[in-house]
Image 1 (tube, one colour):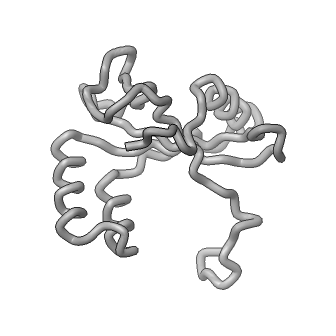
Image 2 (tube, rainbow, N blue to C red; image 1 turned 180 degrees about the horizontal axis):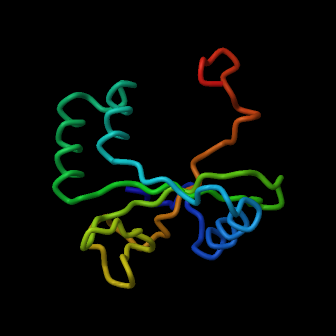
Length: 139
């Protein structure tokens, strides 16, 4: 799945970055819960996942009650500029609450999904600006 931990962020760094967001933006939201089936639909629309694979993935996400949480964060990577960030973690619904899957665990217990104990916290984003679409009607 992610054998080289590409784009993963350590739990300590993620905690520091999300804390910085909450301190600097105390009245803003902290995170968003994103339905996994919607992300799969976007990948299907882009042609990354074919219809059959997307349908199978959506069924699995629904059956296992899997979604994604995107945390707002502020931080610097390897001495680079301090930027706003979006940290992504998988979640699974347990007793009516979507719990974060971090280091292959939910609340200290094995999540029983995935293939390894990498952090499960991903920084896949580049802020806009500067990486904006100047022609987008949403910008």
